[in-house]
Amino acid sequence: MSRRERQRELERELRVLPLDDEAGAEERGWELVRAAHGERTPVHPGRRIRRVAIGLGAGAVALAIGLSPAGAKMGDLVSEVVGLGEDEARPALRSLPAAGELLVESAQGPWIVRDDGSKRLLGDYEQASWSPRGLYVAVADGRELAAVDPLGNPRWTVTAPGPVSDPRWGGVGSDTRIAYRSGDDLWVVAGDGSGARPVADHVAPQAPAWRPIGDTKIAPASGSVHVLTYLTAEMNVRTVDVDAGTRLPTIAEDREALTTPPAGYGWVGPTISPDGTTLASIRPRGGTSEVVLRRDGGPARTLFPARVLFSARGPLTGPTWSPDGRWLLVGWPAADQWLFISTERSNRVVAFDQISEQFDPGGDGGGRFPRVSGWILPQR
Image (cartoon, rainbow, N blue to C red):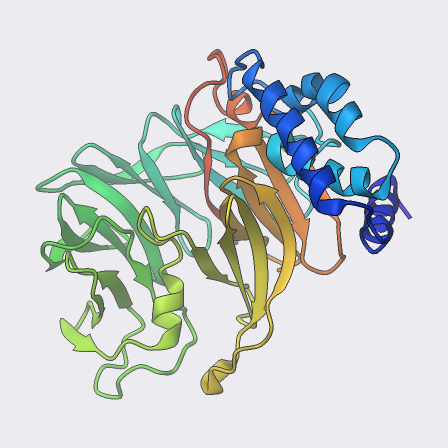
């Protein structure tokens, strides 16, 4: 049993012990924490915020916790208030826990991260999306949509009427399409850069999503594999066959493929596992966020009980599945960490620190927190 597992087992045992004056002990502890928090020295959010907890721990935590069971419970509360980040986080991203490559968007542009931890900056682009086989990346730059190879070499470029955003590449084999927003309108172009055309106007500022390949719930009259779901400006879900130009019924898988809700919706996800059996979400719980797994009920849409893999103070980003479905990559911006969470082994988390700095070489680490656009096993 690891040190982390032993610590959690001890915490569970302490929680079930009878507490003397539990309410009073918690209230006195809260007063101490509030007072210490008010006297703290501000720390840059990108520079290990978790260290604030260490400074407070020497005074308030020692008094609040003591050696009693009530103090042990108070220790949990203090951790929730000021403790941010995994204590055993590694200082550099040297390898991924599973095979494949990450596509990461940062303030400097999109990066490809290989499973050995090596990184390559593709260029000064704003957003990016893998092609289905990982042969190319669709990137946005002002009014231009381009396809570049993993070395950053452009293959083709198209110019849109308005600023390009949220490119999403879907399809199978060489028969692919890229959906993207041009200003407030939704467009689509073939994977070779030909045939750019509008799909809908006045859509929501939300990335569209392709229906997962292999799903057979497509209207018989269509037969197309290029089925796209998007949100209208009125926040209504629409699904279309982009080749035939016809509207289709929206199924549950279409809604689930819209992985990132608009700002303010709270939930993040669900994202579907590579084998299509499990949904991963980030669920807000007061001031914390929970990484939740739920089995997909299939055609019956059965709601299986949710399983909480991890919880943290503040918002989390992601989740992103590994190609083998054994790991979820979640970002913890307030702690400047990436968390690789095992979906098979309880309490197994591999954390990496100083993520903003690693994708901002030469900067001060204060740029935007990197966003993972996909984890894919390239078929090159």
